[in-house]
Image (cartoon, rainbow, N blue to C red; front, side, top):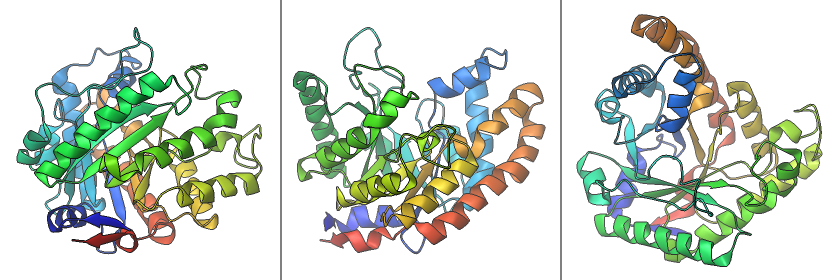
Length: 328
């Protein structure tokens, strides 16, 4: 069982449904969102990125338990959220320094857990790139880094959501068949590491343990049978007693929903999702090409349909985190 203070428990409740399911919307993307706008032939401005986040927050948070935003472009979006929706704020700089080996983490230098809390956040979210098999010296630096953030969140009595994106230092293509073969090990080993009490993590935000495009009957080419994939989902779930949620990793809304059903069939006790691009990415084109009115219309129709369909699947597949915690 994971122990929460009364203060952290109250904030966790604010981020979840009444049943203890985390049905959160993620739009803390910065670099990725800029790339999506650039791909449509437009140079993104800070105002554009902020405006898009405001629209997504305003239109979709009535259907989410909480929203994840960044403090660089997302503070206006935070103000625009539904009054019942909780707020997570990202603490990391976007991306990583590609000139240095190890994808080392970095914090937004003018923010702290205290300042994030003062902004009205119910949780601090930090993204870590992690390869369990990388040089131990590099991973040691990452372990120490996460320990610091965990201690900061304890001091402020605010939940710590750790997002882990795995990679292979010897293979830069995460979409490859070769990476698909090692992904289960990478994801599960990372979860086992950061579930340790020393990191003070309250919720792990993680990838599913397989690349669904390589699961038999889901993709064109199979690396895993359906039964092997289910075994990995169960192994992942058994790797930690902490509450954990899935990220969508940019797959289609339909595939993400099918993934959750497979996880449930496998016996995974995941506790919800922080779903980003699968919900809103097709709204970027109308925003860039047609403007706010067209974007609002898209969000009120397709965006709403995406998030409601996901929520319906979540209610049938996710487990309550109440079963995993005790309160001090």
